[in-house]
Image (cartoon, rainbow, N blue to C red; front, side):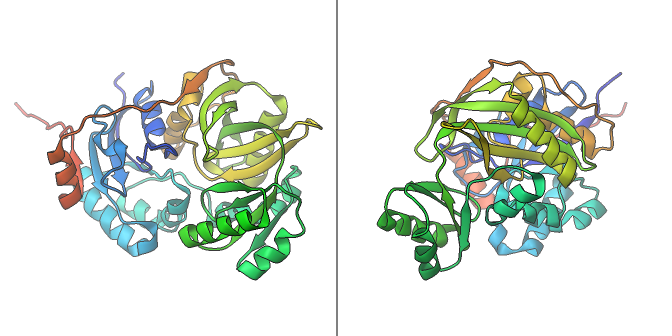
Length: 360
């Protein structure tokens, strides 16, 4: 029996030192045993490396930044859909997901599927709601305060011990060892992502992550835990190893059961050095950039998401290989200037044309 062919659009092609999840998601989709794919890449910047990775993407289109508004995005997606007839869109970046959630019904009318949480579910896991999230789901979280102005920031900062972690609304976190350093980070994050900015108590210990997939009905379809073995200055995992930790997997199951989350999620955690207690420090509303490790370990989460989006019954995945490592590396990809010019001026770049049907 032949496999179905799906045209799937994926965002997050910014495969830089703090990479988006897009290329990892695409790699996992390419390895599906259930379906074949034509990949439509959706990119924001002409220098996003994923645009030029022709072994992974078939065609790429530029889309407007979330700050341009939902209607502008919908108009652009309508134009792309006329050309590509997309079956499914998988957004992979925090800042854009709320826009795709709000456009879900419009996309559905066009025949484009998504598999996303509700707005309420999305907002519940905001960084500035983490204390409440922990209380609701019975999970330890570091003490944190949400602030909207410099005076409020300084006032709350003085109730913490150093070092403290200063976090942006959507991305980026910095560890500050003094008030002056913390204020500097506040200005940097507020200027880049807006307010609020979050002050969080610093927990010393081993950094752990879980990539998980929920079916939207309360079931955990899959979860793989990872221990960071190399961390960049930006706090991103540059290398990691799959582990089996009952506490982490039970936490993922509890979160999915209570939230009834639809789609991918990443739990960022720290196991405190002194006590061994596990603290949840962040909940990301999408697959992580290291999600390909799940496929390498035997749980292909992006593949399972596609099957769920198309209404298939997917049996929860429980086992996976422990001791699988991922290590990122820098690679000088050689591109043609004409491809860069074409994408920059036309907003699209085709690597492989669609197959044409021939009738005899």
